[in-house]
Image (cartoon, rainbow, N blue to C red; front, side, top):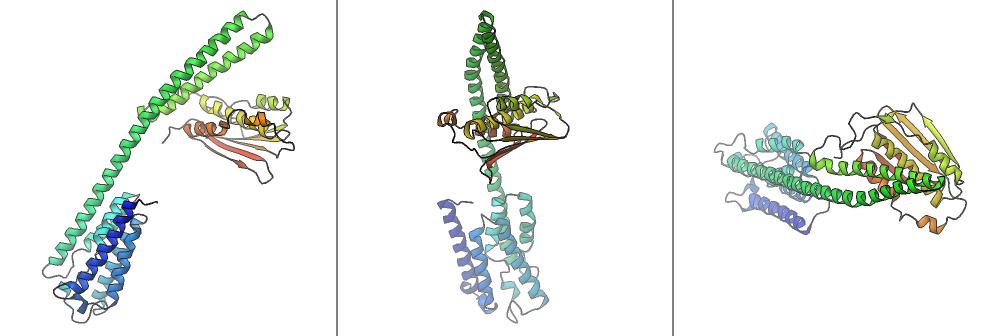
Length: 387
């Protein structure tokens, strides 16, 4: 956790105030308590005050340290009088709660990541605020007021911070939704034109090769539009509460993609690819199937671009709850073609990473010890809504 200059200033102030209050408590009161305490008390109070420096990074440890020191001091003195205080000390004049107590209670409730975990130590600290044997109850009332007020303030600060984060997340979700809509409008317009032009070319073409190419362009265009709609729906889902966040029905299932054609396409241009499949092929949602297809497609494309002459291996492991894809390639025996390597801008894997994250999967990429490269991705059978 990186603290800002203001936070550092506040932490220094907290330590300084705790030290000053401890000094006044021991040596500056009208009836000096230092005559009743052993010298080790000042050392303990100083150590507790210094611990406030870590109250943001370790709020629970700070409050438990204060609770432990207070509880042990109280228990030891009750069990063995004269251990903590000098013999004949006036218990009514002894401030058992250290000056760090209000700061620790505040920090635990304001800064702890788990609010529930902060409640027990703060409750114990508030319980220790009142000296059980105090006749007048003045010290107990004062300590209780300070500690309880600090705890309430910490709760308020934590609640306000959570509200601020919720507002910021809501604003971010709305911005993402607007960007998604804009992306869909711009891209779908252009792709739709390509699809229509490809359809017209397919009708008017005079030779079979041109018609076939136009048909493929049109089919790829329709698939791109479908995938664009799915991605936009996933981006919209967190802010609009749409169940599942995908276009198809939640129960829609299709067979796992056939990767043999990708392997054949790579081998046709000189890249040897071994396809290994473990387990029984499962049915997945359409978006998961297309994502799996794109992972293998992108990985093999990168092998052709960046590792000319290398051998590749596609390992697919089917599980009841999803599938895992591992694509490895050996080191390239030949220098790559700079023009081919630079084509595409280098955004393929990053785009895949975003797409896989949107559907609830994971991906890890990186070089292998032998100089090759690995793409390792895990996908669920159905897309999960982003959290």
